[in-house]
Length: 396
Image (tube, rainbow, N blue to C red; front, side, top):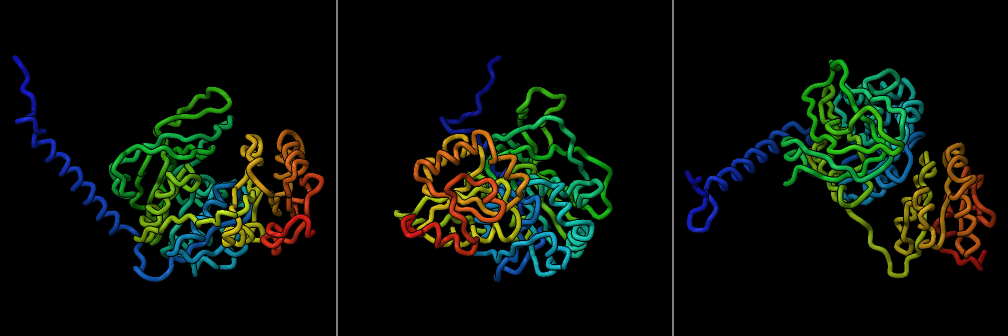
C-alpha cells in the first residue's frame, strides 16, 4: 500500500502551516507570561545598573561588560566594589551585574556582610545578573550567596575556553525572543552546576538553556557537560535573578542575550551599541587579566570616550598569538600584583612585551603594572592616560 504524500497541487499540506502557527502562538503566550513575571520598571528613565568591579571581577569579560553597559542609552552605570555594597549602595541600584573572574575572591571582597546585603537587596525586590564567576558566586554553599539551589561541581582539570553549543528550552526561546533553539556561546571554564536541596526564598525557578557539548582541555575526565544548566532564572523573595555559566558579553554575536537578560529582569531590553572610531584613531591595548577596582576600570571609560583611540582588550592569549603587532601602544594598569607576576613576569608573554618595545611600541603603566612592565615602559598616572597615549613620543 502506497503512503499518500501530504502535498496538494504542489503546495505544502495545510497541517504544516497550522503546526507552525500553533508553535508561534505558544511561544508568544510564553513570552506574555515571561513579560508579566518580569520585575517591570517604568518605561522611561534610566536603568540604574551597578557593575561589580572589585577584587575577583576581572578579565576581558568584565571590561566587555563595562563597555556594553556604558554605551547603552537606557543604562545609568555605577562601578561597585565590595566596600560599596557593604555600605548599602544597592538601595539605589535597579540591576546588580556580577561578571566573570574568581568567585572565591569576589566572595572574600564582599565579605559576610556584603553577601547578606546582596541577599537582602534581592529579598526586597532587587535584580541580579551573574555570568560565569557571578553564577558561581550565587551557588548554594557556605561562603557564597546561596541564591540558586545548585553547587559548582568540583573538577580537577581545567576545562579551557571555546565556543560551545547551548540548547534553549521552549521557555528559554520565548524568554529571549529566539527563533532557533541552539546557539554557540563563549564558554571559559564556567561552573558545572549540580542540584542541591531547595532554598526557601527561591520560587518559579526555570532552566532556560543547557550545554550541548563538552570541553576538556587537559584530557578525559569522568563527567559530561552535556545537559548541565547554562542559564537559570528565578525569583528570590520579591526579587529576581538570571545567572549564566557562560560569557554572553565576549562577542557581538551573543550580546543580544544580554539585551534579552535585561528584558527578563526589568521588562526592558537595553540597546547594544559599539562606538564609531575616527579613521585615524590609534590602536591602543588595555591589559585586562589582573584588573580590579574602580581605579583600574574608570580609565577605560575615558579611553573609549575619545574617538581618536581604538581600544583593544588584551589578554595573554592575544599576546602569545602575536596580537601586539597590531597595536601602537599597550597599557598595563594597576591590578592584582600576584596575578600579574604569574602571567607577565617571565616566559613567552614577557618576551613578547620586550620585543614590542624594541620594535617601537609604547607601553604605559601605573601601580602593579609597573612591576611587570618591560624596560622602556613609560610610567603615568591613571588620570593622565588619555593625554599620554595621544601625546607624541618625541614630546616626552
